[in-house]
Image (cartoon, rainbow, N blue to C red; front, side):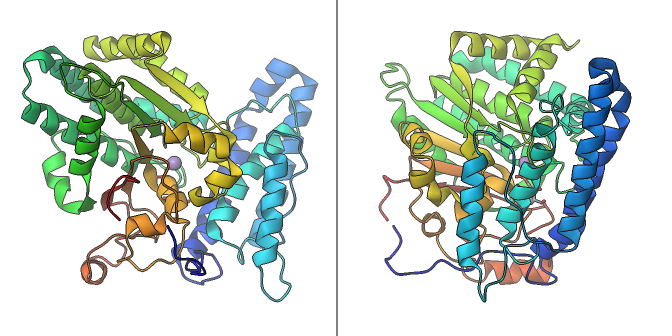
Length: 448
Ligand SMILES: O=P(O)(O)OC[C@@]1(O)O[C@H](CO)[C@@H](O)[C@@H]1O
Ligand SMILES: [Mn+2]
C-alpha cells in the first residue's frame, strides 16, 4: 500500500514536447483516424447494399464526425463530453470532470495538455461515439480487416505453434515436473513475444509473425529485462495442490490484448494450462468495443477459434476444435466489462469497478497482456525506473498477477539500479521500440 499523503509521479502527457506521448498524439493518433475514415469510405458500397440510403447517410455522417474529431485533436481543442447514451457514457463524462479538476490555472482538458493515457483512450471511445450516433453503423468494427489480415499473415507461425502444442499434449502424461516447467516457461515467452505484434504502434502497418515462434526464443532471451516467470510457476503449482490429487481448482484469468497472432499465443498457453492440469479454469477478458486498433473483442475471439478450427492443417484444426470444446463445456469462458475500455488506471478499479475487482480477487493468477495494460497497471506515470512494481501498482492487488509486456511506451519500473542508464546508452529508444520485454509479477501474499 501507498504511504499516505505521498503523491504519485506526474502522468505522461503530450504536454512534454518531444516525448513519446507527444509524438503519438501529434503523429500516430491522427493517422489512425485517417485510416478509420478510409475504411468507412471503402465500405461505402457494403453499407448501401446492406442498409440502402440509410446506410449511405450514416456513413457520411460518421465520416464528417471523425474528420471533425481529427481537427479537434490536431488543433488541441478542449475535450468534449460524450453525447451518446451507452452503458459507459456517464463514467466517461465523470472522468472528464475529474481530469478537469486536475488542470492547473483554469486550463481546459485538451489533447496536448492532459494525460496521454486519458486522451488516447478517449480517442477510441470517440470513434465508437461516431458509430453509436449513426445507426446502423453501431456494430461496425473499423479495425476488423486489419485484425483478420494479421491472423492470416501469421499462418505459418500459427501452424508451427499448434503443431508444437499438439505434440506437447500427446507427451503430457510422461512429462516430468521439470519438463512441464520448461514447457510452461517457453509458452509464457511465446505469449510474451506475441505482444510484439500489435497494430496500433505501427499505425496499422503489417507487423505479423512469420518465423517459428519457438525457435526464436533463445535469441530473444537477452531482451527480457525482468523475468519473474519462475514466481508465476510457483504460484500455479502452489494453487493447484499436488498434481495427482488435483484437489484445488486453480483459475487463471487472462486479460487479453491483441487479436491476430498474439491471441493465438494466449490460447495456446491457456490450452497448455488446462491440458497439463496446472489450471482447471481459464477466464479470458476482452474489450466490449473496438479498441487500440488491434485489441480483442468477443467477435474477434469467436472468429479466431472458428478460423483455427476450419484451417486446412491437421494440428491447427485439432487445436481449434479443442478450444471450441473448452468454451462449450465452460472450462474456458470469455468476459467483457466496460472498465477495460475506460481510461482509468487500474488502482481505481476498487472504487470504479468494484464488481470486476471482486471477480478478480477470486482468481489464482491474473495474466495482464501487453503494453496498454502495463500503462494502466502503473498509471502511465513518470516513475523512477527503480521503483518496485508493487509500489507502482498503488494498491491494485486483487490476486497474484503478472504483466507480460513488450515495451512500447516510456514507462518502466522494477529495474535494477543502473540498468536503465545502461540501456539508454546502448539503445536510446529501448522503452518504445518493442525490442524489449518484461515478465513482472506481484502478489498480495508475498512479503512486502
Ligand atoms: O497494448 P499494446 O497493444 O501492447 O500496445 C498499445 C500501444 O501500441 O498503443 C500505444 C501507442 O499508441 C502504446 O502505448 C502501445 O505501444
Ligand atoms: Mn493492444
